[in-house]
Length: 129
Image (tube, rainbow, N blue to C red; front, top):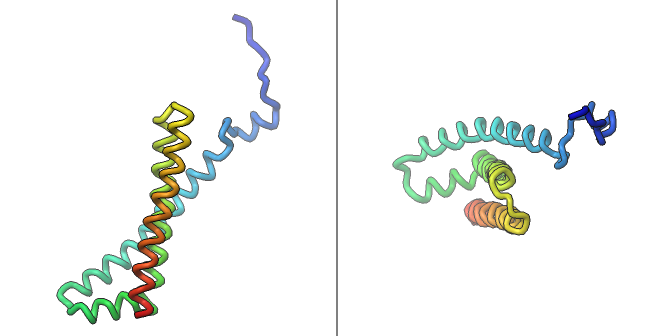
């Protein structure tokens, strides 16, 4: 079979973007959130280890403090974004039915935001009690 001319423009071939045009952005955002989570998890685990065996009131006051609550909020937000991106990649790679894929992507987005909002609400309740 003879070589067919490509229908892609030279600029499209140089950029290397596929049909979705967002693969690199998602890839980099997944790596950025995982690096941020690495730092935040170390801090959160250290706080949890420090709180083992403490009474409830002490735990609530430390979790609601100005040093722990913002880190916990950051951990919640970054982990929910990371979770959404990971599940989105899985859905896009393994679900081939268009309608089902769209429904799953919407459900993934809604679930991640529901988890984030419920978790943020809990941390804010503890912080402003």
